[in-house]
Length: 180
Length: 216
Image (cartoon, rainbow over all chains, first blue to last red; front, top):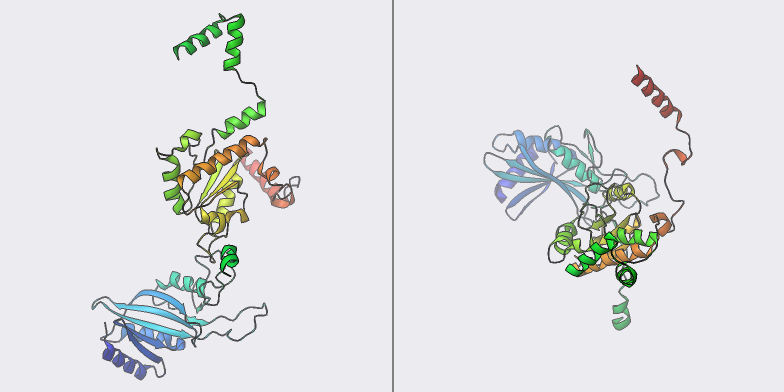
């Protein structure tokens, strides 16, 4: 596990190789994370996997999060692992929502896009499909980007924070009558 | 007991006569109509479909229906059928996700009339605690439900009470399909346009080709 100063060293080295790639670093709960710009994703993953002394070659998880009022709104998380040293590092690719502020007029909604890392990590295939399924994040270059868990004709991206919770409103008339 | 057996034997032999025979008939023979007897026998030998959806299938059905303490065999419904073609009723035991709903509906459609459905527990009746994108908010949105049993999970007494309610319903009903019961005639869905529609040109051609192959 790189500690906080080690993380800053990694950030400096990436800055030398890919200027402008790292936006921020974070060190919480003993877990180091790099926030990066999405266009540098594949370069950063390659650099972390191949440069001597780092060699994070194993993708243990790929998932996304919606940090809604924050900007940029989405983040795709790549949990990388070095299996020799059992060290982990998290890479967050921050993605802005291209449909932000746009009025929904029933036409195709613009979706955030990021490069697919299936070429590098075959395990990312299903995980990227799941992220697409629930967040509507498009992975460019994915071999078969279709819905994986929800029905194929489902409309919407249900794990986004602005997706309605659903269900039917329940009226508790007892409370209204007695305490309302 | 012995006395009854003896009198039944005498009756069968034709030894009972006169007043004895009158008394025997009065005690032992019930007169009813055929359809009532049919409903009575249907209500007391219901075959459930062996089918589970979620946690009610684990806690509810085994604990509250088939175990010795509650024992649904007392009501003649212990013979679970593994095929919808042989089952009389289906118990929706748990939440129905939107991906499962078409499958549940297909199972119900595959059952033969007369058929019934029990929605067991809060989830399949109303969505229950799952008020979200993945779960159908009440199974009666996509199929007819005869008895809703509330509870999470329902008490065994509630399950058996719901089951006896279904039996009452069957006994009170003449032989009706579910579309007649729920006033849903005319909602049938047919492949290719309707019951009297001609087969499509391609399928007729394929049928003839297959017959030629069989003959050759």
